[in-house]
Image 1 (tube, helix red, strand yellow):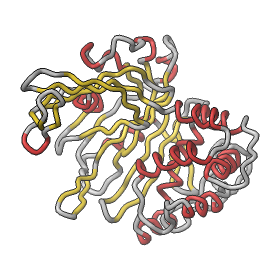
Image 2 (image 1 turned 180 degrees about the horizontal axis):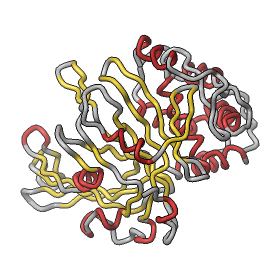
Image 3 (image 1 turned 90 degrees about the horizontal axis):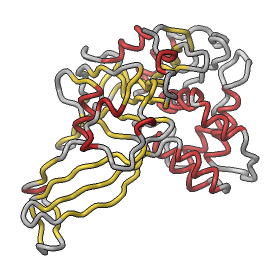
Length: 337
């Protein structure tokens, strides 16, 4: 994010040695707050940490190797911020540039794709990707001849469209899976008609991953200008997907018992589209919430996490939500309320 805003947050941090119960902060090396926030969410995803810790790499370079090093360092009991400059340099060599404002969702997807491309252990790379992979059935019906075309699609984060007013995560998810009419400039080619025709497009959920990433699309791009939506988006600490979506949005092969999730990380954006800062709220194995602002980490309450719903200009707004699948009967253990 912007250098001056990022420096402002660093000056408000506690001394370098400050940390909370085994959690390590990360120094801000000139606009690295986006990567710092994502690393905190990866560190709180113990499924990912366990996979990387059990990996015996033969790779000498690459994003997977340096990600492993920094995540293992973040698990240690040392009081100093975890060293991650090598990881930042590695990202820079892979075109995720240092000292440049970045979009957290784009960097998140780039890191996962680089793991897939660069890790020599392809089975492990696939296992890591499967931690986040949402599988959906795509549906496209021509409104002229009723011809239906279906396929299978994979996403590592679900883009949630938000309105410029009050939103709830549940409504955003329903909108994503709602059938959309495509007309005028959005027409699709119909093989039977031999031309572009009005059509109806939608998705059906086939399977959900162990860690579900939801991207709240707060930035609008038009006429070469980007602006941020500061509107309120509420989200629950626990959710049940099968209670949110209708049967029409679920594939016949969808497993209902895989529907229960608990929030484990929130990537937060403060400021506006061109001048801002990233931080993270993460939930670790002790089930307590922590706030990570670069090198500064402290324990917080669920009520403070809720302050990221948004609704005020320039305030903290949730930008990415990561939910962990919870076994049936364990939802109450993961609820702070």
